[in-house]
Length: 312
Ligand code: UDP
Ligand code: MG
Image (cartoon, rainbow, N blue to C red; front, side, top):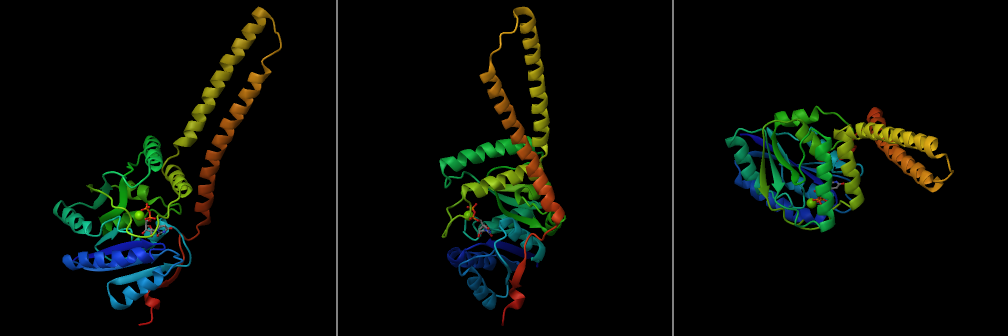
């Protein structure tokens, strides 16, 4: 019998878990597979860990890893992938926005069509505000033109994959993990199933605008070096403009003499060009910072306890 490992990152999901656990149990009962349900407690400050421990005590399929603090969803996914057992592995959010019952369909498609990855795509982010929708659309346009790894706005992290894919993802050992990109980077035969994403069942989203913004920058910096090329291109363009302006000024001076003037426009140009320089210095700094973090080789997460520490 094939085993499916399910990774569930949880950060303050005490409320959601009460709905999630029965829902996933229902799915596991309906399928003829063995299961391992791996909860990752990502530094929750509520009673998430106690709830998970309670499940682990009474249900042998449940395992858990609890971090020493909040390391972020990317770290939780990595820990899950590194520790979960199973011929197939999937990961889903604890808030039921990744409907557990979809796993049945995903598994069927994966087996029948002999695929490596089956993922879920939302039809529409109807539960996002206009502001977030707009920024998401713009962001993926920019990301798409910068990178060669295909990434779409509505792809969820909810995917079912073979052990081979998991191993491929784990072979990417980078510290800055933008898993949306990592999963697409490895390739393999993938199929996307579309569905309407429901609202989260309880609790609050952990993503503020600035968190999303920083995550977005991680995506671009992690999967493209084109912003650096862009700085070079704009540098050349500015040199060219400066050259034309010099020519114009020399000719003007020779033909009409040189009445001193135009300092306000000069000040504007200096401020503008300094701004552009600082902007690109910032971009270079961003790459330097990522390289700096990579070279430190700090662990992506630190485990405080697992189900093995549970008193039976
Ligand atoms: N999550 C996590 N660590 C974090 C933030 C989120 O493990 O630092 C988990 C969270 O518990 C949930 C999933 O990641 O299971 C998705 O988070 P959320 O629902 O807040 O994101 P959204 O669905 O709004 O994109
Ligand atoms: Mg959610």
